[in-house]
Length: 209
Image 1 (tube, one colour):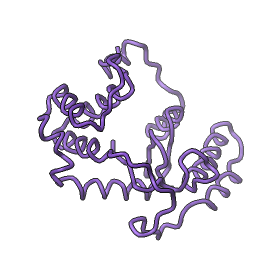
Image 2: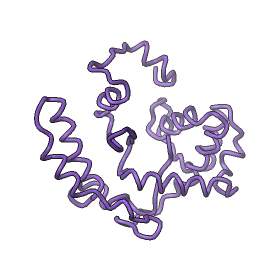
Image 3: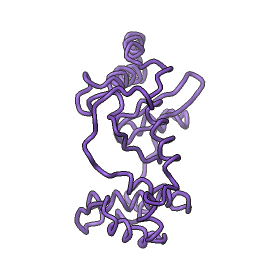
């Protein structure tokens, strides 16, 4: 997992695919992938997708393709995540942040950009609350966070969940929960998906039982 909240929306407008270069390229590449799975020709969709790919030589630190983001201080949360990841608890911390923000644990939605909320989450997963809440102020993770933003821009990230998988043919990207089956098949080479029952899901994420 990598935390990303840039000053500029990658590729352009986040909601409208016709205004978002990255999303427009993805829509046609994804259509090609679905066509292949259905046994249809994907050549047209892939040729269109290539027209919308941003040039590889763009330096996004100097040239942005997008719109200014609203002022939300996600850095305080993202740097706390990087601290958690450094301590070997990145997944636990990230999962707890989502659970608290979207009320997955039934405790009500909370502002995960608030220092006190972050302290509580850090304590919950066994981290030092002071180190987590002060991670941004420490400046220890600025360079790492900037590198992750640049990496996300290079992969054409425009939303979450977003996965980029490098293989011999290049980088293949997957956006949205409904593309997880396609990602699984690409990673494993499987033709069919495994079936998981409710008990197995609870074992993976105990807070969601």
